[in-house]
Length: 143
Image: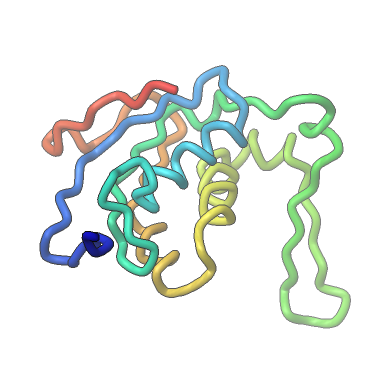
């Protein structure tokens, strides 16, 4: 009986992937991105090692929210002062900061540990169709 393969940090080969969010639901794009960032698409996936690849999400401003989420869903944050709870509707958030909305969706699906933060740093999000990572020769991820 063979032993379970465990990836070592020095053995990991990272690729760059492009996900086009235009016309796709925000949650579907986010789950695919989180899967690639964690490395779950690879046979060498190891839960306690960052085996994931880099992800570039383009056209974040064209991502969709299904149903009435655009009007009803809210983003909450607190200033730290009494009575400092702020709320922003996703309609305003997607209009003003679509990159932030997509990053928040993806990072919420990663582990909330130092490993998850390391995986989150491999995410690059751009509002339009242009990105400065042509030198990394990214491939298009279809799902």
